[in-house]
Amino acid sequence: MSDKRSGSAGAGVNTRLAHIGNDPRSYHGFVNPPVVHASTVLFPDVATMEARSQKYTYGTRATPTTDALCDAFNELEGSAGTILVPSGLAAISIPFLAYLSAGDHALIVDSVYAPCRHFCNTMLKRMGVEVEYYDPEIGAGIEALIRPNTRLVHTEAPGSNTFEMQDIRAISEAAHRHDCVVTMDNTWATPLFFRPLDFGVDVSIHATTKYPSGHSDIVMGSVSANARHWQRLEDTRIAMGICAAPDDSYQMLRGLRTMGIRLEHHQKSTLEIATWLEGHEEVARVLHPALPSFPGHEIWKRDFKGSTGVFSFVLSTDVGNARAKTHAFLDTLRYFGLGYSWGGYESLAVAVNLSDRTIRKGPEDGVVIRLQIGLEDVADLKQDLEAGFAAAATA
Ligand SMILES: *Cc1c(COP(=O)(O)O)cnc(C)c1O
Image (cartoon, rainbow, N blue to C red; front, side, top):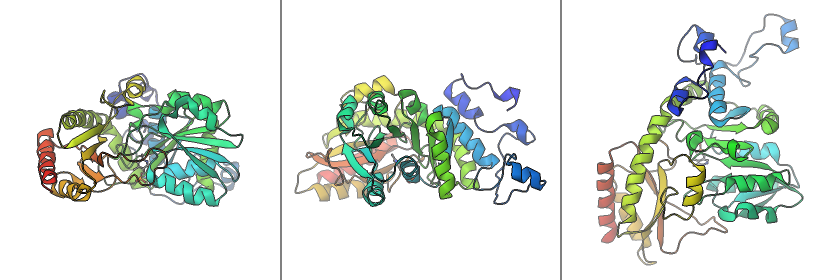
């Protein structure tokens, strides 16, 4: 690293986002890193090859492009190392495969990202890992669920779709008393608003598909580990032949540069719309951790530095008209697209299916609708939602 580069560690978040990752001096002064398309890397002689002393050896291992992105994540997460994987779901499954073996017991939060549950209930079970789901609000009470063979505790806060908060520090401390690995899916907050390793988590997981990418055009995941758990994670990646594509890695680093200012906008617009929805007659409840009315609000206020653009609300329905109202609302929206994922520049709305929950079941007072508030103007988004509510009211 050059002397001119090492100075952004204590700076503000947008300053750091503008300067983390690549080292311009290492590549002729160009501000951005090269996009290195590579399988073969040549060695000058056999001795160098045998000594394993050359920095780059093969395309799956690392390139200057993937290194730049990994360095950026390490600085944001405070981690010893980061691996890049082909999707956010792989950023969950790969560490699970790294730390769990046949005969182990894993504790998974019940408000987990649904495809994670699918992975646990199929692959992990087939491989002889016992999986148990726990209440997101269990806090230090997790200790009562830990058995002699419990190896991993997986957390996600706020929870997918229903946004339950978790006391991450209390859970980590209890888990570490029994030598368990603590993983956290930190996709919602991004490392700008929550740094899991500072709260005792060992391994921080991101669907970088979401805010780091920011433009709905890349699927990728990152897994960042502390020093104790880093080597096993990297060894697992190498053993499985997992690596990230060069163009996607470059675009991800590009996305990080604007993530701070994008999130400021997402946060502000989302709070404005969520607060407005709380007073709406068609809305039973709003599920957003930054609202004082939300049950997990105190934990969010204590531990998180901000909130992002995804939350849910409960659309008031009766058993008889739930389907018609939901369809009318969603089908009427113009700016809110109907589709999966989030974190891009555009708004999205989707009816949430909570049928996989075993502890935190869906609410009885209506249908849960998840919104992603994009970068559009709030007045237009409110008008769009108002048209949806009008259609729902007459459905
Ligand atoms: C979207 C998402 C993932 C998975 O990301 P993909 O890139 O779509 O596989 C994982 N965790 C959470 C919390 C997510 O929202």
